[in-house]
Image 1 (spheres, rainbow, N blue to C red):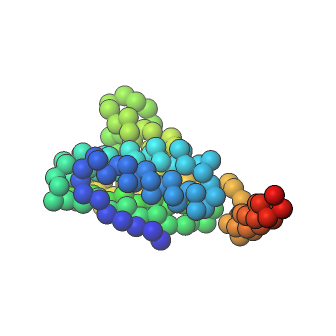
Image 2 (image 1 turned 180 degrees about the horizontal axis):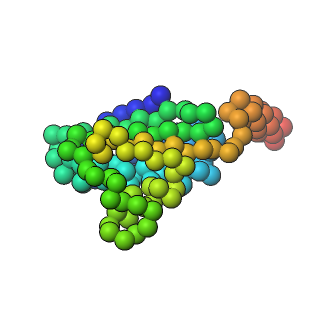
Image 3 (image 1 turned 30 degrees about the vertical axis):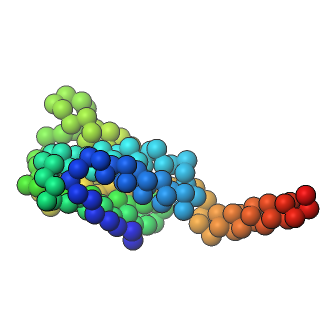
Length: 149
């Protein structure tokens, strides 16, 4: 599990984006990076703006964990929560960010009275062991190639 905390300031969204990019790069799933980062960043921004009301004394906690076949993200704020049941699958009464989170994640849950968002992303990609073997072979190829030149 990887986790970190940020202050409730939107300037830290770049740090979250970098965290997601590096995680996807490490797992060899950069082709999923945009699909993952958009809803996760939206959840973090919602936590900063709507949950913690940009109160710099409050933090937003972010976790990422492997789940069978994918990744799970947990975003937690220190606010009062909200009634997530009024935001459905259509854009009729606000909640554009929640709509996007529902559409781009494979599973979305609101926990702890709406103070915590949990999203899962199923990754239909290459198994990590095979990916690491391929990266190793590729590095070996370039090492041999440069030695010959």
